[in-house]
Length: 274
Length: 275
Image (cartoon, rainbow over all chains, first blue to last red; front, side, top):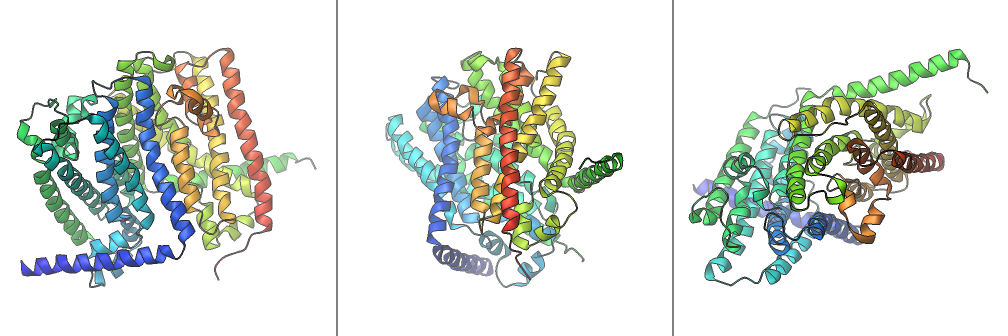
């Protein structure tokens, strides 16, 4: 146990060190960094533009108003942006695995996960956080909620839990790359699909899809389940009210699952043999 | 000088070789193909659900019924695969950075033609192994509409061909920018995003209101997914077809001419990187 704790502490220290280096290095090319950060911000703006266009044509979507869908979008996008910011370009390991470059990574006395997350870390991704965070603030203002203690506690918890679930999904997906290094497109699609699926009220999906998104790939807990409580909505699956507060538990399980999958992936790694 | 029959034959053999080589390359990694089909199915199913919800609120929005809108999103993802709506695919920037481009310049085929031959091989492979299987899988979940007449199929085929030309023209110009920019990844990323949104594969451009919508519908990106899908669904028919084809062909000619002119400029200033 003490070993495990020390490994986590070391990993965290290395992570901070490498990310600091990435920031300092990017700061050498300030114009480029500023432009790329702006490009990332604009990129996320197009996501929200799609929701704006939908609501230019309809007053409510499955009985959800613009402010409510904006809240769902913002909590999902913030969670995924946080996870993608921290994990960097983890899916690049598909190339490293195929080219046998993981050999060098595994021999270094630093966690392979930390190395993979920081090796092509792009500081400009911080720009992805700005727009969802702004939409979150605006949607909360527009929603005119009654600020009960339950809501005050649940909203920060859902963003943190959502980021952990999103991050676990990314790590689990990338662990698959040890088995199928050419499948990075599927891994990216699963991540983008999860991001897209949680931007809209889940009542738009069929029951099958809803069950899949709740129990198999538990992205419903990124924002939908807690949002049902915040927005005082009934659950289309009829789960008990307690499910609205399960996000932290699901997040913990997801992190444990991702850690197991990642370690299994590394054990599965065979070099290229060439 | 007029090419002789022998010249034609040699040229056809050359094209066939380039296209076939490119096609073999894109079929080499089976799991990549499976992953791409999965990716297209996921996006198609999710976008179709969104369209279904929107069209249930406002039936016949922008002239599509609900089945039409769902078909637009799903078959539109397939069209997006054929026109590489996610951008890139032309390897040129990578070859410029590594200096491999020198081999491409020395080839006994025109530079643009070489890349275009590659593109034709890619389009056929993507159409047969990615777009069509993905649409077929989605058809198990949603009822899709097929063009009702042979002439509409023919019009769709022509529109899709023009869409491929426009998309190649666009992506070739983006790739070519790597000759001038030390790190073209920023341009490529922005172009990919613009392509995804303004092609109409996220939402039909016809439902965007106001000036923004009017502008979105005349960009070259609109010629890659929006126009072929409107032809497919018969939303554009009769005399409107002429306008649609002219719009696509106009952008194709403009972009390909620009690509040709800029290639001449770029090859004059090429500096081979690396040692």
